[in-house]
Image 1: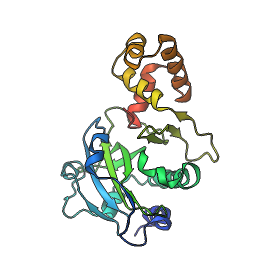
Image 2: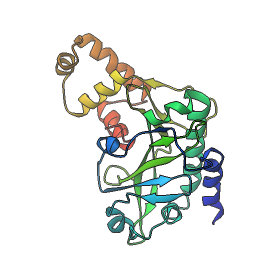
Image 3: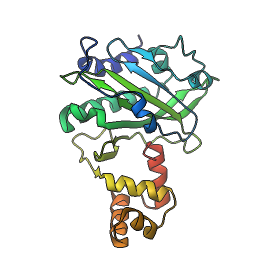
Image 4: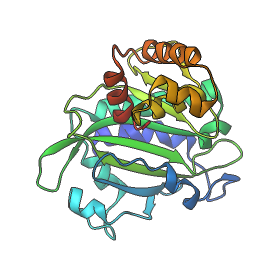
Length: 251
């Protein structure tokens, strides 16, 4: 195994389940509506118990040239751009710290982790992809069971990686966007479920008045939320906000 991939395993191995026994789990079918597609994509389930793959989308063949019945997890990891593998390792380390030290491992099933990196295509060239992962199962001690991974090609939206990581809350959990893996002890800026709802409505082209009517709140409240959202996301315009949220897999 090449050293760069081994570094990723070093992040995951301490938290893998010791045996195929999970207590907290949700079904794959329940999460299919969480798959956000802004371009060509594929998905698979990784079992951290033995690093085996299942439910591999046939689209992986067209995108990477991998045969679904033969591809391994190491094959997929090996397709990450050599200059981005260090960032992916840092992002996974940040994810581990976020769940085990900040919000609690039991909330891992209520979050979608998202970040971008370059992937090698079937023709040997590289393109920017969005990576989203959703844990499907854990054991009583927070050991990693199975995870749904979704990879979406986004180079039609941007060729520039932000090298940031976001934790998108599900089941009414708050979201945390654009964390820098190189900054230690950074302040975690929360985005409430209401703010995420407003972002999605903005992306659908609704005006402040229309959003207010749909959410049964005042126009003034919508304006305050919009200003807070722009400030938290470090976006200067609504267009920049929407683009950033698309790149992070929020909308």
